Length: 299
Image (tube, rainbow, N blue to C red):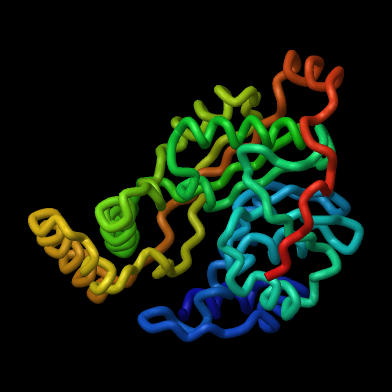
C-alpha cells in the first residue's frame, strides 16, 4: 500500500480526512486499507471527469461497500445529492456511508437498473463506475445506459480496460479473467464479465442513445487486489476437466500476483449526453415511474 499512502499524502485534506474515517477491513490477502485505496481510485476518476458541486447524481450499481458512493458524495458537496441504486448487494453499505460522515448527501435505493423508479430528468448526471461488468450481458448494458439517459441528460461510464502496461497489471488481468469462467462454471450464471475495450464502451453508450462528448484512458497507479478468488471458490465446479483447467490458470495467476503484485489496469472513461432527438422526444413524455415509489433500502 506504499503508493496509496504516497498519493493520499498529496491529496487535499478533506479527501484525506474522509478516507481516514472509512473503516479498515483486513481480509487476507487484501491489505486492511483496500477499501480506502479503491475509494481513492474512484475519486481520481471522478475528479478527472470534472464533477461540480450541487449536482443531483444517480449512481447505478453502488455495491455493498459504497466504494464509488463516498467519493461521489464528497465531490457533489453539501448542496448535492447522490441516489445510490443497488439491486441486492448492500453488505455494509450504510455502515461505510455513516462512517464517512456524508450520509446526509446519500439516499440508498433498492431497485433494478433496468427499470428505475425515477422520473425523466430527475437527476443531472447518471454514473456507473466499475459496475458495468456485473450487468450480465451487452444487451443489459445498453438497456441500463438507456435508463440512465432517461433519468439524467448526461452519463459518466468508467470501467477497467483489458490493457496492461506492466507485469503487475498483467497479473491483475490474469486473476480477474478467471472470475467470469469460475462463476459461470460454479453457478450457471454470468457475473464479473471480462473487461471491454474503450471503443466497445463508446459503442454501447451510443446504441443506448448517447452522444459521446469525451472518451479517454486513465492511469491510476494504485494496487488492485479485489479480483482475487480463494482456491475454494473452484471446489463447487462439478465439471472435473473444467475445474482442473481453471485450477491451472488459478495457480498461474496466484504466482504472478505473488511475484509482481496486482495493479489497476488503465481505466476507460466515457462522458456522454442524450442525443438531441432523444432529448426532444423524452421531454414530451412522463417517466415510467413516479419518483420514490420504492422504499430506500438501508442495509
